[in-house]
Length: 460
Image 1 (cartoon, rainbow, N blue to C red):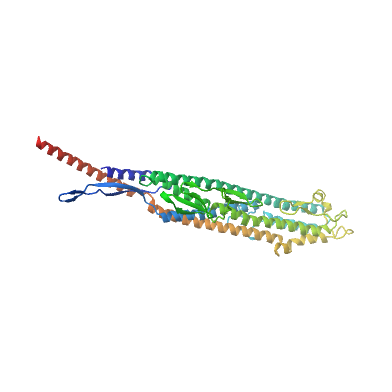
Image 2 (cartoon, rainbow, N blue to C red; image 1 turned 90 degrees about the vertical axis):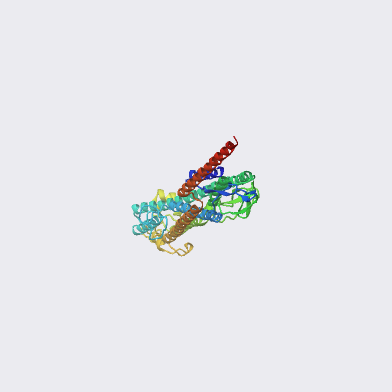
């Protein structure tokens, strides 16, 4: 009867946890009790519940941990690249919303820097057409200030994205350290619980969940330690050994605000291979850094080429030698304040004696269609469009990978559920089976009791 009651208890536990995340169904292992030797041979002595075991697939669990790491990597990449694209303030496909998959010269609607560059060189052309027009000069100053402000804003937004990614990396490290601590503690609890026999199923489920959550943050390898412990190695460094937390993680500045990960006690710089930590690092030091460099190069060449043509020209007052732009990159580019306050100082003429001459203004206007060597032989707009297209391509790849990983993760979860998940139909069948066995055992005990009473009554 006690054996069947144990079976009823285990089935009840499974039903209670049918919706519990990470729960693995349990099965009571029943075996025949040792026979009793009699004069006519061994006689059966009933059945005993020998253990309560989880129904798990270690292979599937390992695969899910690995896929968690891959999913974490691409999800972090996707988020970082989406934030990078949003920083451009470039609407794509004419939809009024930022595309999350691609960005090419055919995609841009002209509301961002691409259209502003075109407007700038068109404004130079208007001044070339009407060199003495105050209105044309005012429009040129406005267009130049818009381009400079956009480059300033993009640079600031990129810096904000970089800071956000560094903050995210630090948060991930904090979360990883907590999980490592929890896993080491669970190793100890499992050993204590199983010391006298049996299996600490609930604790093992908790540890498996922690391992999968750790996988989302960084890739790691495991080995089986003594007493059912799981040892964890990250980047070749052992962080959990049995019930001991051998080391933890921290971020460090590798230079220029590029935070990476190292061990605290050992001080070993780690090379991570997956998880959201590495996804964040790769997005920050890859596509984001490339985009920032591209914007700085566009700004620097715009400053240099426009200033070269402008410096040699003459204003309406006959002055010369003034820069049109100040600054050295996207974060510092500004329009010369003197020109902004007095557009007549724009040096559009090629000679001091002919105010209506437009050769300097025309040279600046022609920069819009010239292939600039320092821009890889592309125009300003072409360079910008190519950079946006590169970002769009990277984000499109990340989107595809996230979708693929969702499919793989869902497939593995389904496979594990078929092995470890609770089936209500199956558990109800088990309940009925154990119930009937219990009732039969109770009837047997009652029958034996009646027989013994009758036997004793015969003597009376």
